[in-house]
Amino acid sequence: MKGTPPAIFMLSAVLWAGAAIADMPTPAKSDVLQRIDMPDTHYQMGLQKAVLAPNEVKARHIHTGPEVAYVLEGEVIITMDGQPEKRIKAGDSFQHLAHEPHISKAGPQGATVLATWVVEKGKSFSVPAP
Image (cartoon, rainbow, N blue to C red):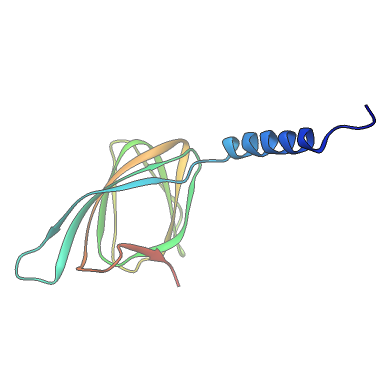
């Protein structure tokens, strides 16, 4: 045989790419468990569970309404402008006011967080910070 058939090169490339993708961290899995319209208002309350991979970073963002969160498993590191980072471990809670820019990062074991929030009906809860 004079050379390796192109199909062998293509198969090798596909297998290599698959292995590289398998090593990439999975993005946070976030499920809104419940939304409740608050009577006689234009607000809605939500309950959300997020599962973050080890060391996963959620880019700088804001919440359009207040949030109260409880760390079920692992650790979350919160960085806010002009403040030292806060480490919140399993069993502890934290809160954010509306429009407070911050970065969230999971600890080395990942994190599972349960959050409640209030937003105007029809608005997204989390958006990139300006």
